[in-house]
Length: 377
Image (cartoon, rainbow, N blue to C red):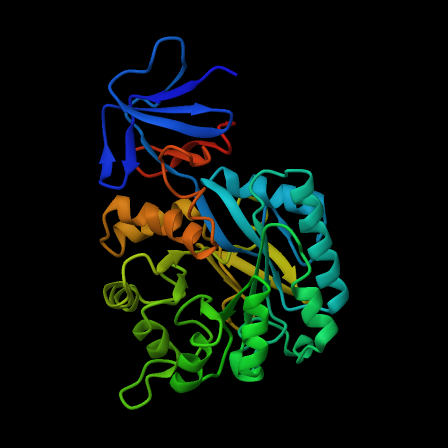
């Protein structure tokens, strides 16, 4: 297969966006990043001055393209969700199952396993958000689905066998031995929808919990005399935080404070996206109730937030325009840092030799114009 050279763009490197570079791709991987023009004989992709960044990686995708993963835990459902998000630069995603019955969990895990066997573009594994959550911090989840799993169910959670498995749980519902056992089996355990206080969450971080799902939301808040789960995560130097930068879930100032406090690289962008992202319908049904999305905000009839209508390109734009971060750092929060969180930092999240050619091109308004997975447009 002949080489392809991406030229005439602003390429995100470890030093920031740089011009006058050629990114050479062969057999789906980046083989060189060279100064100057493309080598002779290479096919060229002229970026016409656009930004070229690593493809975005979203670890929390409930749906897209008018499909909710809970309602369509199938290979076709996954394909449609991934296609819907691809137009917004998401080249890797963790399809997310909201708290549901065990039978649905089985179908979802089987579907992801088969999708990965079929090489459905963009599927990196599965995110099980519940059903082991705290009723006091349920959010839009149905507490009737909540329970404490037995050994057989824990085996199911860890049974994917390919890709990555992410599990969001309330750590106060589990013993430390169970948290450590899940982590030892390769499950990326995160705290979320949790009533854990500061001490319990710091303890959980020391026993296998890797980070928190949607920092600030559905967890105990930071206070003057009780730091809460938010304080535990912001203070802990090793844990990762997903954040939803949509102007609805978290105040911009709170996000700026968290980003300033955490070590660089430990906060990543997520969407918590629902079916309207990349779809034609503004409403969708969850647990038999109609959810309404208006002006980018998805809610129940009583105003409870129900995921988001955010896409990853929008999250990057908001991080630049609302939070004031430079574009290169916003792109890393959407690509490099989630790749590292997933344990894929050696193959995804950088434009450098040896990395898979998962790429996204952005115009000056930070809208996606093209994307590539393994070099395929």
